[in-house]
Amino acid sequence: MSGIAASRARALTAVAAFALVALLVFGLVELADSPQRTSANGSGPTLTLTRVQAQLAGSPAPLAALHAQASLILPGGPSALRARLTALRGYPVVIDKWASWCGPCQQERAALQAASVSYGRTVAFIGIDSGDTSPADAKAFTGQVPVGYPSYSDPSGHLGVTVTDSTFTPATVFYDRAGHQYIHQGPYPSAAKLESDVRRYALDE
Image (cartoon, rainbow, N blue to C red):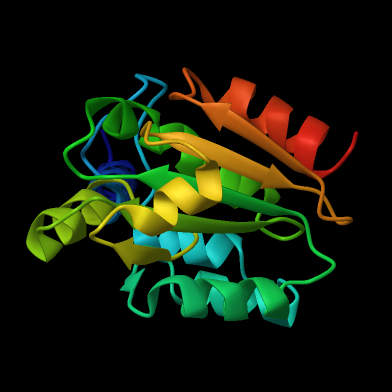
């Protein structure tokens, strides 16, 4: 092999090695930024809070205000929830009643994450953390699978019962734009089933 050919071969080898290193670094960065959890319904990895909010960017102001508080647990009880619903008048609303101690709530959390991202630009999602007496447990719960909306703290459980007309947890309440209500008792087994009900009961599709 001539000296020129050997130099070219060495140059090509160096370029290939650099490209391989760059790909490995990029892959490690992506891995670090991705959640390492498996979704509760086994449908794949969950999104980080940052990615949830990024996918909802550009929503109308009343919905954007919800997304800015994604996965937070808010105080204020019934009066705060009423004020929020007043601000959302004209929008379809989905209310998710959950608790950190509720196993079925944990199982359906990934479905709620997916639905709140898919429909959060047109539908207002709100949570009620009902019957939770440990703020630390509730905060840990919301951190495991972030959703695109806040929840209102309801340690007594009274607000959750009033809104869902049931002591059962979880429960999901749908309101269409006209305020018509539909209540689903129990967990959703998949994002597809929940999103189907969002379209049927909140969006009247």
